[in-house]
Image (cartoon, rainbow, N blue to C red; front, side):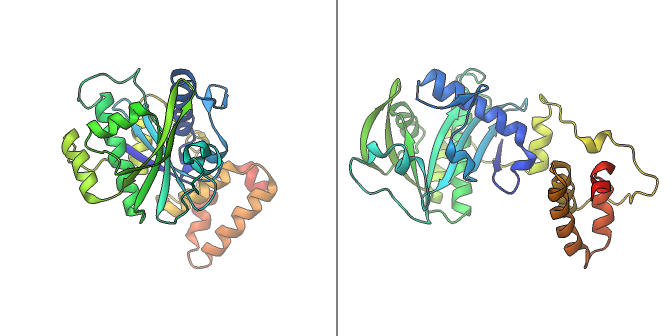
Amino acid sequence: MIIVIDSLNKHMFTEVLDEMFRLRARVFGDRLGWDVNIVDGKEIDEFDHLDPAFVVGLDDEGHVVAAVRALQTTGPHMLSDVFHDILDGEAPLRSATVWESTRFCVDTQRLNRGKSKNSVSYATCELMIGSLEYARRAGIQDIITVIDPIMDRVLKRSNNAPYGYVGKTVPMGKVAALAAMLDCSEDRIDRVREFAGITHDVFLTEEEALKVFSKSHPITTEVQDQPTPANQDTKPLTMLEKYFAEQMQAAQSEEDVQAVLKLIEAVSATNPPTQRQVLSQVPQALTNEA
């Protein structure tokens, strides 16, 4: 089960991202021995702060079992700024239709062997399908990915062999690193699907992902703990109103509150109930400050 987390919805999935960063620490720091920055058990680097897209796989129990990061090559990315030795003097790829895929990892400790739904093979293929389909829908034609020789063999065995390589293979921790090229064609996606026997839509909606994740990570919010005002509008919040309410919940200063209120006021000019609905979900202390 796949969820895509980006700059627009990451505020909803902070716990999912934390678990993903912990998985990355175990894989790249402990297992592969890469020189990565691990703080509080989480592996996070400067590229995670550039609003990349994270394609994340969840198992049936709601645990993060696979993940990969997608970043545009038009700006800073790992191959140009960190793994430049791989390029062997070549200029880094820079194109709006080429994305860099890095930090591909699977939880080999939690998943079993074979090709069942909760296996390493299944989770790997599902993540490949999710990342390729997500990129294709975004208009991306090719992916360049920094991998190790083991992952290169995994790609080939899963009928997802790279169509080419860039630069050379260089030492990296306990293993080596190389840069491979993958097209985001329907043919490639179909080949991986056929290999894995995956015919269904692999993506979860945001609501479905939160529900699955909460199976093993109970999610509580301040909104759920607040008493319901007698005059509260009982009409369900729209997605836009939910977004505003979440932003108000995340506000850390009066300046933050004022910024959200101005945006609510602008929208409420054409939809007055929006302001009432949103403010009913916000802690009274915040609205009093405003």
